[in-house]
Image 1: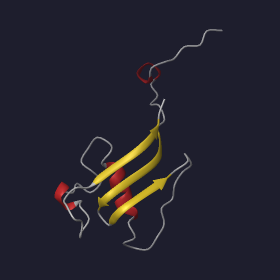
Image 2 (image 1 turned 180 degrees about the vertical axis):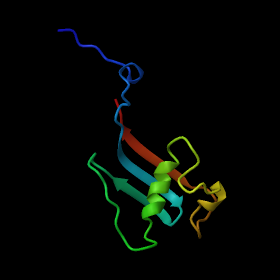
Image 3 (image 1 turned 135 degrees about the horizontal axis):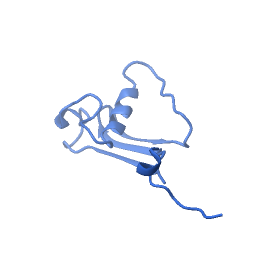
Image 4 (image 1 turned 60 degrees about the vertical axis):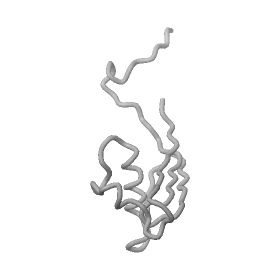
Length: 95
């Protein structure tokens, strides 16, 4: 038996990518937060204004596009932050 890899374009399938962790600093309501994931589906729960959508927006900045809410970059920095710098990072598992 011969094993070979097939490119996603050739097979018509997009390879699965799993987010393993997300880290934000001075992003929206978060001074600093890190969300650790294990590949299973995630459900974010909490009170209104707890930051659920902010975490989803952080992830959206890591994909091509302009973010979940189309916000200006100047609107992203946490109110009360010492500078206008904010950061979003993630660890991925990908083929």
